[in-house]
Image (cartoon, rainbow, N blue to C red):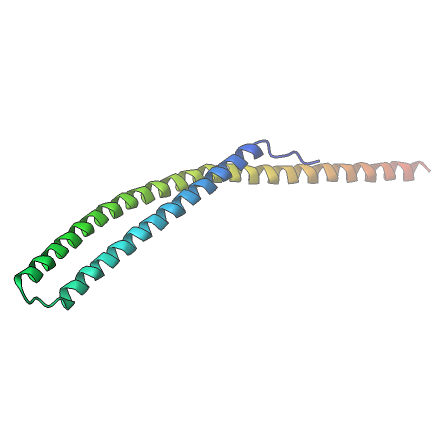
Length: 143
């Protein structure tokens, strides 16, 4: 009878850690995509304002300049958010890679254990077959 892999509980724990790390990585990548989308939308907004605003007087020019300055400030903030989220995503990627490496080592041990158990089972079966064959020879020869 095959023995259970003695580190199966630890392997389940490592897989759970890997799954959690994958979920954190997916969330970090989603936040990074959201920041990138917000930056693209802000840049389009800035480009649209520059092309569609006719300047007719000083008040319009002043309002347009204020809007551009505000949008540029927002772009700088979005760039900072994107850098922060990129760093978070990189950290999450590193954590996932570490969790994957920890699980992979145990998976290799489990595969080795399974192969050893299969070989032991085959040896035991062969031994039993040899015993049966030896008994038949001695019983057949004694008659």
